[in-house]
Length: 296
Image (cartoon, rainbow, N blue to C red; front, side):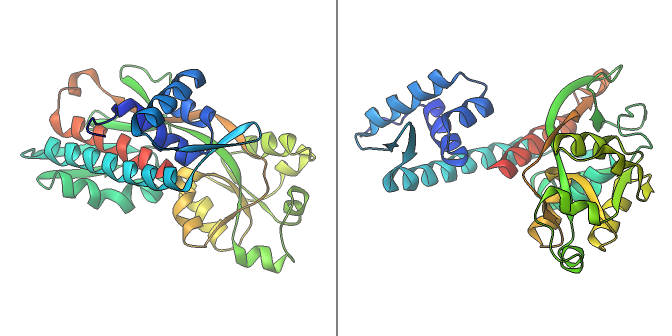
């Protein structure tokens, strides 16, 4: 085959390989399922070999299809990385980012070197607000806020939706004789950020008494909640964005299959007068790509 397949078809394949379903790929690409299926069929026809095999009512990648999808993922990552590196070339100045404390501590701070590698002459300042949805700091060039998306006097862009689930340290789980099901969690203290709202929603979704959300320590900062959880002081409700590093390191484990979608989300907010700042534009491109790679 001499022609290079369309980028849209390759992205559809790469998304399908990660999600394992057409609907998952369609949701990420913001396309209909039939549009994704059409792209996959066209790609298979253009390549001249079988990418998929049908098992019952669903399709799966063939071994050759999985290998090709892996090559495609590498190629797309190379293209994205090249674009990001060249976008940051020659930029300088100071970029002040206001970020929620949890996101700043558990996601942004561990990855700040990756942005510095792209824009080495941009000096970063990372500050944290008192409120998660606060976008009022006049010194900030860009905000990472958590809320409903109704922030005023800034341009708002959805950065990442959030699902909550219980997190516990393996040490505490062992001390309690094992935590395998949702009711097992009630043997531990429940840790709260601000109030018991998130726990109350989760307990209701799990079919458990919501009164359990009225007990347990309350903290005013997500960093404190995670520190207490990792130290085995109780079980917290957390999201994969800021809890992922601790889970990958084996410091925390997620309990059960019940997830609750948060009514709030992470948003990237830019004051209109600072929208044209090139370091801010480079940071926006970088963080969107970095979060997309995390989901892969």
